Image 1 (cartoon, rainbow, N blue to C red):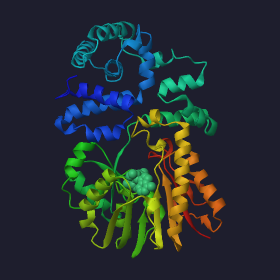
Image 2 (image 1 turned 45 degrees about the vertical axis):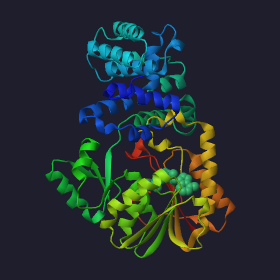
Image 3 (image 1 turned 135 degrees about the horizontal axis):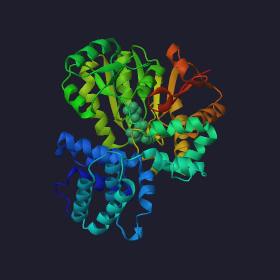
Image 4 (image 1 turned 60 degrees about the vertical axis):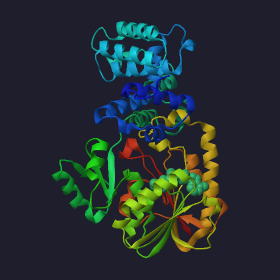
Length: 450
Ligand SMILES: C[S@@+](CC[C@H](N)C(=O)[O-])C[C@H]1O[C@@H](n2cnc3c(N)ncnc32)[C@H](O)[C@@H]1O
């Protein structure tokens, strides 16, 4: 196998293979795989291919299925190479000759089966590409009698996931969720609310268009490519961080104020801790993170932004929240618990293939234990914000219901901020959804003593 200096297409095949064979999250791979060696346009192509194949995996596999003679004889590299080829033909409209040639070359690099790839792609072209491609006509060939199968192939989500959404939402809404999960999310940054208008203008002068987020007073939705924007913002002399509007809203739901001490329990990369620091202006934030690698990222982010937060003391601890036993009482606690991430599928399209129902149960148990442990540190007058980026009730409503049932001294309470009225699902509990609010899918609950 040749590994040095792969082309963008070759690297895409390698990344996809690692995701499926080694179960490594896409986010981790993109951070680890040294994408800096690629030009801006090659990096764009690589991401388009990897995200595109992941968002359309079942559909692409369904298209390819009839062209395999003996799929078992093909390596995962060959299969992912074919998936990338089909994605380029169907969704990117790249010239058939160039795509076939490239795919055959990739097969040679990975010591695969160039002649098989050549034959399959040529047969595929013969069937689907003789006239301009009509995606809806192709989709109409999927078995319409089996609703689950149809939605699963059309939107590339596992059937068990769609089944549970169909039990909770109407068919129309389920389809909207699936569609939203396959859309490219906005690039949103958080800034200090009082600087938002000035920063929007500052960006505008540099040719970057932005608009205010609909709800969060700190958010700017930015037009353009993420890496270009990061480049322009790199040396900016103001507080900013990449953060979806839903995650920003969590900091407002917390309602931090000056001079308090905040505990942020599952902290890295620090988005909520840092925006909370900016909102409270002065005080102290203690961040807990148990993962060494993520702890390093948290500290890098604190280091970058602390000069814009001169009156907030931010302390980070590399420790497991279950080991944390300071007898302090905190006026505000953020518990952003590890979860399935099913609310951020549009950002992490691989999540849908890694998740399963027992994983939801396992995480729900851990979330319950974390909440029970951390609630011991809440001040009598304080607020504990429990949040997860998951759409599933086992990780949201059920965790809170069980907690309130077991610990009768606690209750949930609404925010004084009026804009949360669009998100309430019960007293002191909100849900955001990509298909409804154009932001990540979060569950949040504000807990306090009765
Ligand atoms: C959802 S992420 C947090 C995102 C973060 N709050 C933000 O807004 O940027 C969850 C984090 O919790 C950490 N974590 C998981 N279990 C933990 C535990 N028992 N103690 C401390 N940190 C934990 C994970 O390593 C991960 O970094």
